[in-house]
Structure formats: C-alpha cells, structure tokens
Image (cartoon, rainbow, N blue to C red; front, side):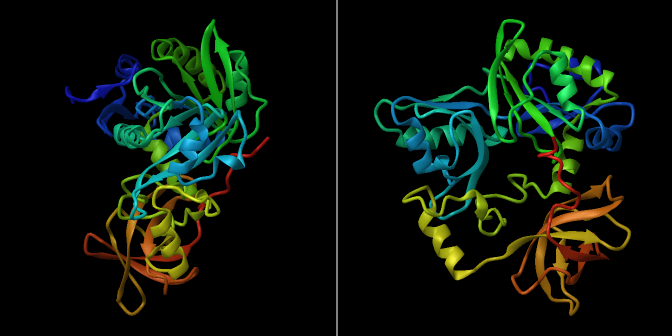
Length: 367
C-alpha cells in the first residue's frame, strides 16, 4: 500500500479505523467500524452518508471554443445543457470501446471541468490534449481538488448547516465559497439518492470533511466507504468502468446509448457505435435478481433454461435494501426480460430472473 496515492483525508480515515484498500491506484476507505457496508448503505438510503471520493480525477479544458472541442470528442451532446449544468458522458476509442465514463461540468463556452475515474484520468487528459486545437488548454488537476459526496434524503440539511447551496436542480452545480475558499457544489452522485458532490481545493478538503461529518452525524448519518458506494450504485444499475463499461464493452452494449449524442456530426467512436446500433449486434446489459440463496460475482457464467451459455455477470453483490443477490450482466439478445436463467457461482447453480435496472426506486430527483 506504500506505493498507492493518498487522498487529503488519508489520516482522517486511519484515525476512524477504516479498512483501507487499493482502488484505482489510491489507498481508499472500503468501510468503517460500527456496522460496515450494510450500516453505511442503510444510512445513505434512509438518512445521509459522507464519502471521500477524492481519488476521482479532475481536469479542465479551457480557451476559445473549449466546449465545442470537448463536444467533438466525448459522446454526449453538450448542446443539450447550459452553463451551470453537468452531464454524464463517455470517452470512447475509435472502435466504440469505452476508455472512461465521466461527468462534465459546463462552466461556459470556454471552460469545461471534467471528473473522470481515478485510474483513467491520465489517459483521458492525454487523448484530449493530443487533439486540442491551438488556444485550447487541457490540464490534469487530479491533485488540485478533493471531492466529497454527501448522499441521502437528509443531505440538504447537512449542506444548509454549512451555508452551502442546495436549491439547484439535479445535474446542475453552483460555484460558491466556504470559509472564504471556493467550492463547487454539484447535485450529482453515485448512489441513487438525493445528494451532492462537493469539490473544494485539495488543502481545504480535510477541514470541510470535518465540518460535513459533524453535520452528517447530527442527522443520524455515517461516514461511508467505497464498499457501500458499490452496493448503492449496483442497486441503481449504475455502471462501473472496468466491470460494466470497458474497452470491450461499448455504450450500446451497456444500455447507455442515452448518453450518446447520435445527432452530432462527430465524436470519438461515432462510426463504430452507429454501425453497432444499426446492426443491433453484440450482447446487452441486463439486470438479474437472484431467486435462490447466494451472491453473484463478476465473471459468473449465465446459462438459459436449456443449459446454453448466454452471458456473463459484470457486477454482482448482495442488495442490503432488497436482502437478496442482484447483478448486472451482458446477455445475448435472445434473452428477454422476465426470462429465468442460472448463474454458475463457483460450480453451484444459482437461479435468477432477468430484469431491467434499477433494482430499487431512485431518489435522485426527490425534492
């Protein structure tokens, strides 16, 4: 673990007794004492939780025509949103495979802030910088900012106690200050609950964490690690790059075609993705709800009622909300919603039903 990068809150996590692990090349908290993943998951669904996700990348594309340039590269269409809004998008290779999925914050026509995944930040920045026109600057700001996620139905109360704004709509952001320091507050998250991602300067992150954690605990919430983040996102059917999206899994296969601006004249991978979409080729991402006792895991083989292999699990877990196993899986197009399938979990058959995520009701737009 000594070679891993550390968030600005590393000492805070150790002081709390967190179980630490390698995540995308960073030493990050998986769970904290006092209930672990299930307790942290439940706190977010019912009250509020606080996550350190400072391992996520941060990058900026700026200069004349910066937004137009980003729009010619990444999949989603920035013309669908305006300044002060955020958008989920993907960086694809020319063959349609996903280099990374990320959130883009549109500040202005000349300023786009990006939050890629930790392990892919350098690659995304490199690709954007390589094609950038004269006057457009692409900066890797990975260690310039922290990211704190306040998630759950009581997240507004937490932010209001610190004087941070909460009145903006889902997938929009406000640029404000906290104790005289600039902070971005974006109404986004990876849990399916109403919540915010707060982006302070790196050296402000620890003091802001302390203040937020005090208010989270006042609301009956908990600090939450990446274990709960994974069970929460899986319940929502949100993809994880490296599992449900990858250089071998395109947005079309991942049922994420909604994040592609098909009417745009150009974006990386457009020709390949347009062809795949028209041909209706390749497996599709579906949800699986386990009907037996057991927990599905990544790479489990999926078979149909006749015993024929029809797919593979990409993400699997135990759902603390439903109290049963759930999974995302790439399945042959012959498999339809409602079909009964069998998962091979370490040589044991585990029955499941094919469904469409999310597995629980979404609360992201709750008022």
